Picture 1 (cartoon, helix red, strand yellow):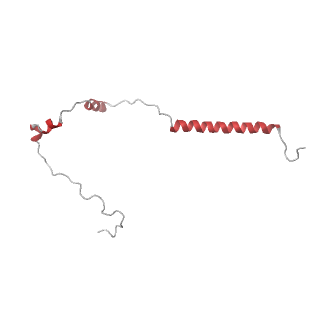
Picture 2: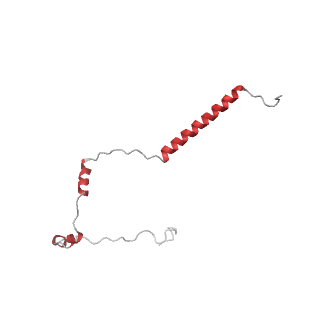
Amino acid sequence: MNHGVKKNKESGLVGLFTVIVVFVIIAVIGIFSYLLFFSIPPRTETVLPKSLESANEISKIQFVDLTKVVNSEAFKSLKPYGPLLGVGTVGRSNPFIDYKIEK
């Protein structure tokens, strides 16, 4: 005699359906997480504008020894046309004090 629990034939199918739905949801979340965090994004081809193509040519230039440039007559004939710029005062001496106190 089963007095307390009544078992329905459909409850077995409902339980199986719930397990399948939960499994599918977990699988979708897992696949989405993998694609979002661990997969390598596909590379896209970019076409450079004409102005940047010349920059590519400039980057291939082989530069000469710097001492030859500094010791050349053309470099020595250059004149400075302005004073050297300094950094000056940067920031406050104590950034944690109140503005009213600092003078």
